[in-house]
Length: 163
Image (cartoon, rainbow, N blue to C red; front, side, top):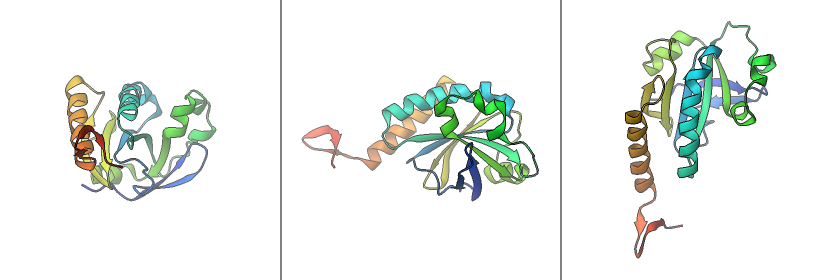
């Protein structure tokens, strides 16, 4: 399924158009609908930090999805000051019709968070809630397959990609 065309902004107010604004190949998105879901987001960020070390072109972003009518100004609240510099740089705020956004991605509700793996504008894998070992293994397998397909081994050095 295609990731919907939406606009968001960084906490500093820089406008970002999605999915074109994703720089990773692929990009892991951790989607939350309430600031209070930070405790569910953090375990995904730990996993994503390890993946970013392992895969060169991989990136991840946190998407805080708020209703377009919301007056919440995330970048100007004390809550944003609680984030580390890395978290601050990775977070995007999407002001959208939340119901339409959820429906376009097949997300069932706002009570939990979602992790979406997006490649070339398409959602290729998704999971709900905190990561478990099976979800992490599945994601690693997918990323390993993707890496092999993108960068086939070159003989006589099977562990290296041709540049």
